[in-house]
Length: 393
Image (cartoon, rainbow, N blue to C red; front, side):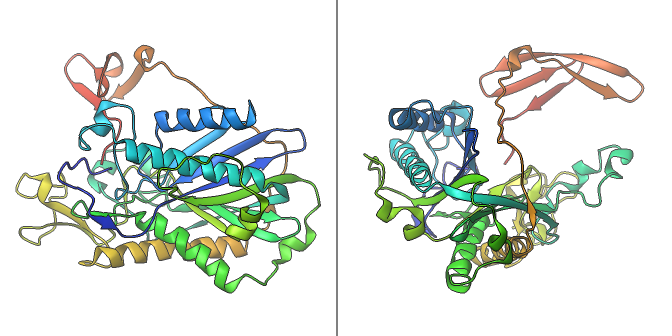
């Protein structure tokens, strides 16, 4: 899922995919769930089914308002689990096996996190990671007004934001971070199920903590009040299509099952590529046309090269390792404690009644009319058409 390539059929596994969840509650009873999913993106129909199961377990504790499910945007994950035609054309329709395994895994990880809630605190830290993503369309970026471009140091977002979760008694139990880079270290010729660079980074950090930090206590954890927040964490591998029938016993809760949960979440990755060496034509070896990202007029011949080129497994490792090392640095230095109540918002926008105004030099502001089509939103002006696609990979 991700390359829209019907010939890209899975033939094996690079490494297994996981769902990772954190639940945070406050003394007032507010709570929020965030699930980071090793998949190209979340799915409305998967979310609906997960919420149905949570309602059967917990009533109205978890709803569409306070449960967020996000994909890491790996292009090496399964397809066929989304509900709209555009997203399932290249998987030749809905794939029940993909759908079931995602729903089961997400349900399992939320149940584990719910059953492991304990008092704790959350810390935040931020920093720039400079060499794990480049603008895949620098010519397009230059079309932005100069005064807007001058507001930013780079032509892509380089900032990583990390949340560090600390149990009042057990110390650090995990971290979630957000950083923008595409899950395309594994190319469109790859046929192995893979979490790509973010899935690799998560495994690196969980292994690091397990091996190096198991018997250590961070300075920050010694000063945590007994009751600020309740936090629970878990990760889940595939349950092979078997539904989780009942809440898990304490013996398999997260502290005994996985001592540390680390998620590498996706951020504003639209034009951010992990292929940091640039784009080249596979027929000539020359750089792709700068203005059009094509080779002799064909975009199919233009491929990005990761830092491990020609070995895309090595590129995946390198970009994953860069994110992992940055996350460890932020994790170790996270001192700013989050305070206040937990809140959440969910908004519904009717795109069929959305009006957009676009400035054009010498022509003032023009109001665009619009129509809704099955594949996306089309904005129509007097002389030209602007197409807004649901995804651009």
